[in-house]
Image (tube, rainbow, N blue to C red; front, side):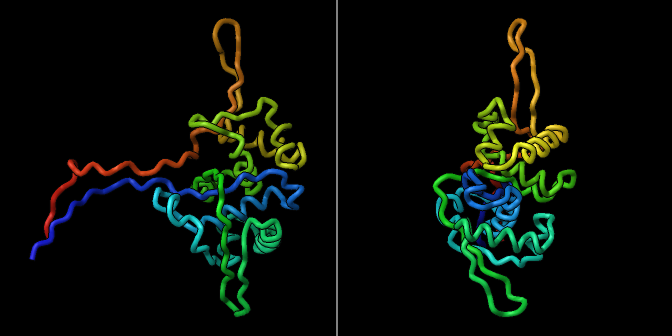
Length: 226
């Protein structure tokens, strides 16, 4: 018996990790580098961001990567991961079910989020950023809004430091390194006559915006038999 089906190769959307608004880190007793560990851990929850996951089951299964696996994803030491997980758990960003058996990974769950920001999975594969720079890029993502990812502040470093609850120098050093390496655009450009405006954006070196797959166009598909 012949079964007919339609086939077409679709371009899968970039994989994304979702994070909540992450403000007042000092009050939550978190380090800004903990956000990199959170994102690395979360990347094993659902590795493909798509419309089905976003609408139906974004958090229910949790994940259970080993500490070594999380450390490898984040590019940090295992001890850094252990300390960060304890702080994230205390701040109620994650729930941890610890195994009492050797070589059995912990099970992690994430509370449902009313607001999210998307972090591209490719961030973990970048070679020219340090772990601190990746962590700061995750932190500042929430301050860039709209399709063009414009920053909501003009006094960028000062305002981000204030809202994150971290030192000015911590933001300054990482922010300007991200600008220098081309992940953040911070420049002045001509605007109208005898006027310049400041452009502060996340660059297109990474795709930050998740878009669900469009409805398939069945008219372009090929009819096959098997």
